[in-house]
Length: 252
Length: 329
Image (cartoon, rainbow over all chains, first blue to last red; front, side, top):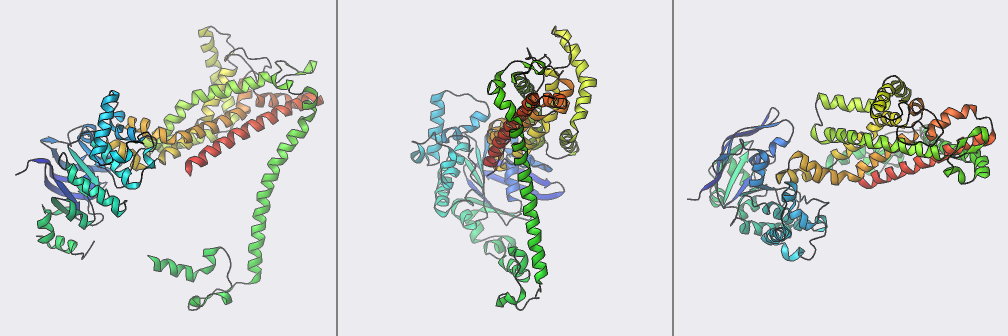
């Protein structure tokens, strides 16, 4: 049995009085890809943003319960330490437009005021870009602005930026919904590589994607975690009728 | 999605294109819907209305051009008799018919830039506070309205406040640091101006900061940045041209401000020796001396100052507008 890296205990999230995530208990094993799926407004993104305390950045947003990273409760930690250990990639590629590709990769170090020797920075940049299969494509244009890249390359740059911080967990919020099919499959292939070193939690409302890339799948509906199981099990033999209705396309 | 939009197009044909379609010309598929009858008189009214708008608009343009032409025509006597030396002449002595505008150019530039330097920290702080830190709540609302009110207060009131409060304070400050303690002068004017120009850079800066895409900010937060780090590394680089444009608008305001400055600057025509000297700006010397300028060249020399001021503020405003439009597109 794999060891658990993230575990939520009775996690609840609210926007004002609106209860969007209800009593979620989930165990996420290390070095796995977890897909979180469900219809729009089911709380899956809110739950994801709760894991690295991004949820509370929105005015009026609050959360209750525990989210354990290894054994530490991230709700008790300072959000900045949480976010250094749990990286995040967003729906739309968001490289910093004023920074070069090189500087985008080490943006996390710059933002946190960490000064590194040039050689070490070079190593981090090459290593991170290699991890996201972007090094070969951009190694001759590292000084160009990140916004010159194609959408798929930008998204991989954003993954490299998260990977550069050597987090333990990577969160992806519908990482391919703004990408074309070819870029999507490149990013999906990356997930298989990345899970050797990281634990990946991917929010998607693309069921095929969930089925393709994940080891385990969580199905959210109306703020509740309805079902959480091995992906194969979930897609072939769902236990809950709501899950069954969702994956057979009866609602979306 | 497409169906309801189409229905609206069909039932309200005249509202969607801005042109009036008479019912007889409606396409076939509309025949089933309620017909609209328009008379020719209504169509004529529309034309009259449109022409009125054009005329009003043209009047504004002609008016401003007229002001520029008047300034040029009225300053011709001075341009002819004094030439370009007018701009760098250090002496302004109407009694001896010597007109050098340099003391006023220097006075204007000193007060404006000093005011800018004092106001920028405040306007940027307000812009960041309202744009990023606390966009909502009772205190941000209060702050926002107060800052906007600063722009609405008539400048004579600032002048009065300067006379009653600021000048005595500056006077005791000056005597405490051992410079000539008059109280009136460039320093006092700059302080007043600084307050008056805060809203321009602050409100433009605020709207620019609010336009920073939230996904960029979140990207930085997700890498463990603090709010200050997000502001410094994401928001400020992204908005720098917008903030610069706001500063230019503030500068344009400072250059042209007349009443408040006239009341506290001391109104002397000598070259200012330092920022505590008395002096005059282009605007204040015009306000002070134009009523008593009886000689043609004297009168014309003052108007030429107005022309210079007009051109400088136009250029600064144009650069500012250009920067803003480049930023927002």
